[in-house]
Figure 1 (spheres, rainbow, N blue to C red):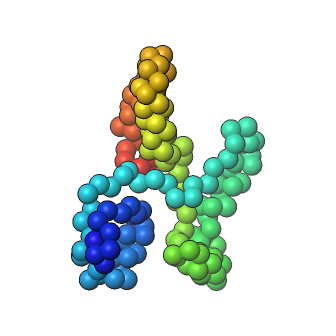
Figure 2 (cartoon, rainbow, N blue to C red):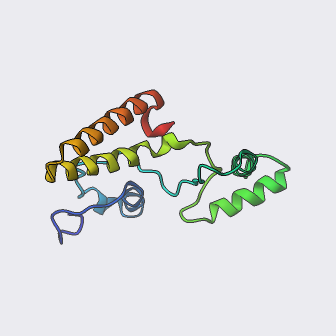
Length: 145
């Protein structure tokens, strides 16, 4: 109730953080009652059948961008990144593990649908998928890193 106009609202972590930086007095009036797992923002993905050589070139481009080369090149690329959206830094390496939380949400939605439809087979499949994803999460850690 930052402005006392609503009792409940939803937001995302990035916007809430930005709001707290820009309007700290109003942000103190907000009570966060639940925070979801971090959902990847704009991950770069590719199709499974993309040739390995192409994947290697794409990964190399993103990982080196703003990190390697002459000082002028690094400075120029970091300036490009800084001017994007709210200001980006160099890209981080990632994998499909980054999307585990999104996949868990999708599996949970399938579970709810199966429960609502009283579909025992679909429920069993959804629960098995949730269990598999939870196991992967424990291996990869929070946020897939």
